Amino acid sequence: MSAAGYRWAREAGRVAVPAALLWLAMLQGGAYAQAAGATAQAGAQPGSGTGTEMTLDRVAAMVNGDLILESDLDAEERFTAFQPFSEALQATREELLNRLIDRTLILQQMALQPEAPIGDAEVDEQLAMLRKSIPKCAAYHCETEAGWEKFVADQGFTLEEVRDRWRQRMEVLRFIEERFRMGIRISQAEIDEYYKATMLPAYQKENAPAPPEATIADRIQEILLQQQVDKLLDDWLATLRAQGSVRILKPGEEAP
Image 1 (cartoon, rainbow, N blue to C red):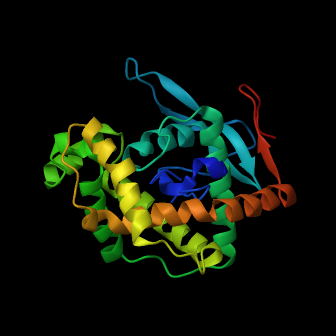
Image 2: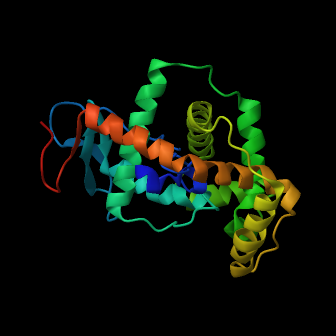
């Protein structure tokens, strides 16, 4: 992800999320999977044709031995549907790949300082808020279980995958916040301005009623905090890249 990509969660859009990965965080369903063997074919997935077609899943990048697959790029792009506050939901393949590289570097650092996983109750609480915060969810009636499940399925995920990805996003944000945002304070005036200038227009564009500011103030504060830690995060990620081994494979190039 590159700090521009996570404007992590600004991504949610990228935890994110600065590079923060921010982000808006979020990997699962094979992300950063280890490929079997030393080839660029990490597996196969059903194609979109007759049902017998198979699409090879290739390695897009290698980060200190961890692999990022083409399917991870696809999943990252689809997951932007759950990042309602992203400043740029449409990202190029290069931006998506850099976002995933940055997130992988962060996850590797997190593994060196393991913390207790975030509990189910806290994840469910945030997902309940998320369902009220996605403008496009209004048409699905995501306040109902059936509506939420339909919205999730239409993005190509299962409820469990979204839950796992959101848990990881929360854990990445926790790591970044503890490392970079100590001492940063967001004023109520800044939250008010973001709600009026960014949130309200987003809901108006979708012809959906905007939730009261008080119900999403915490998420807005998170976005603003992420914006302020971007510079610190960018510098740190640049150092990790320089000190580690990051290799981006060109289309058709096989992994060593």
